[in-house]
Figure 1 (cartoon, rainbow, N blue to C red):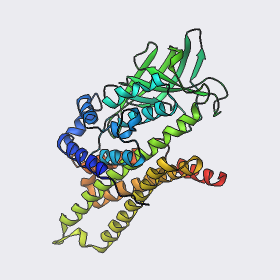
Figure 2 (spheres, rainbow, N blue to C red):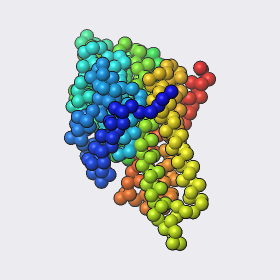
Figure 3 (tube, rainbow, N blue to C red):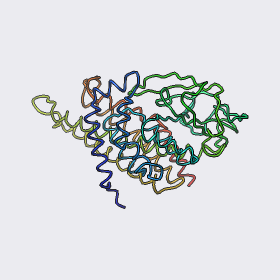
Figure 4 (cartoon, helix red, strand yellow):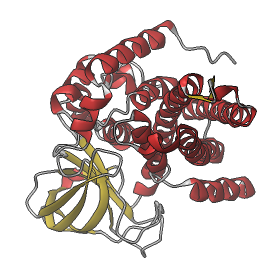
Length: 378
């Protein structure tokens, strides 16, 4: 099978790389990512104009890509530039609309692709540990539609989101897969309390409390009580995107480290000439190439695999970027010495992002266990 990128994907990657290099330099990025907004609405609109968001979705819904390799190309570029914009939320909510939305609901994709609406998934809850099936928030039927109550935690850009995709239990016990429903909620709806905070690696997240939020009947996405399958489906896109983002960040971190080994001198020679450091760097390069292979497999799985086979490849990719990401972060900083931890050195910010990617949508331990369970049940 030929995994070479098409000309269109190469052109997209080149234009995005140029834009990020020109508009998203590390100092400007840090001002935005660690600032009050956590990102730049103006730059997010420019990303949309470049087609960055449209590349995540198929032509049938107004995009011009949507394949696994389109998604991986975009997020690898974002990882290289440490881009702190709400593109992951756009991908997740958009794919949920494609998978389960009515024709009217799918019209929301137009504003998501245009970058005029910030979308976010509100699924994780206090005390949860990556379980898709653990939902304690509730939605009760009313004469007008639904009444939503509960708390969601670590909602990426939830503080500013215009559109929220919220999971809530309409039947069953806390850990039941059946009985989970999904709702499209206006981020400014009455009854929502948001407590925002900065993430350690930049960007913003929020804890959202829903206090008897009134929703119309048309807020339900998909079939009542059958939201788990949609959550698992869109989680797959998130795992691919995060793996590709991590790969991009690793490539930059390894390049910084190689350059440092070639220029830093001790005893009159470059430290890269020391055999021990050469061996460590060689091991690092091999591990990064292993990540590249798993990202290719995950992108192919999104397009061509089904069921347990799809989920295994996606969990394998997330597991691999988890342990390799930590290795790249640790080794790169150690080979830089004390300067590797300084705020002024871009490497420190890449290291933080690599570590935190491991904790989004399941860490390496979670996905190793998931991979093993899926293999046993196959």
